[in-house]
Amino acid sequence: MKQAIAFRELDYDKDLTNVFLWMHQQHVIPYWQLNLPFAEFSNHLKKALEDSHQTLYIGEIDGRPMSYWEAYWVKGDVVETCYDAESFDQGIHLLIGDPQFLGKGYALPLLKAMVAFQFRQEKTNKVIAEPDIRNDKMIHIFEKCGFEAVKPIELPDKTGLLMFCTRENFEKRWSYGGYNQER
Image (cartoon, rainbow, N blue to C red; front, top):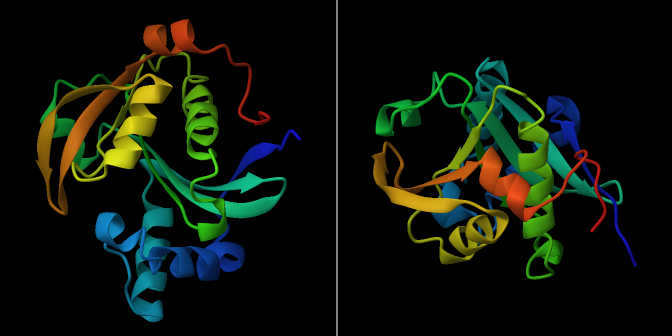
């Protein structure tokens, strides 16, 4: 049975509780470290929404919210000092929050759909990721999507593995036409 993958911009009032609960899941805490008290997390999310260099999304399967995404411009982000960033490079952070969707093969089609969406920006030739260097499962998913490991990098909250997915590599690996794809 095919399932529809969709992304929508995060709506603070509608999504705050879900994202708060997801940040307190045992599979999320070690890598995001945002298992804050509600009021503190609420303020964090408001600030993230006000950050003009990123857009926050909720990933849905058949209309059911199940993942959180931060799509960002590398220029203006702390990671821009870690490599020779180009003006239209984009980056991605993600988590599958709802534990019912873990281990079911959703991560790769979701990531593929979001990267395809980012490459809709014609001037973007590279999408980057910097997963926690300990997060072997996510690193594997990024590699399956077309990302290549570049080097470990030190960031304020973690040691990440800088990974690049070039448009050329992505297009060789996948065909795409939009971000509302089916699994």
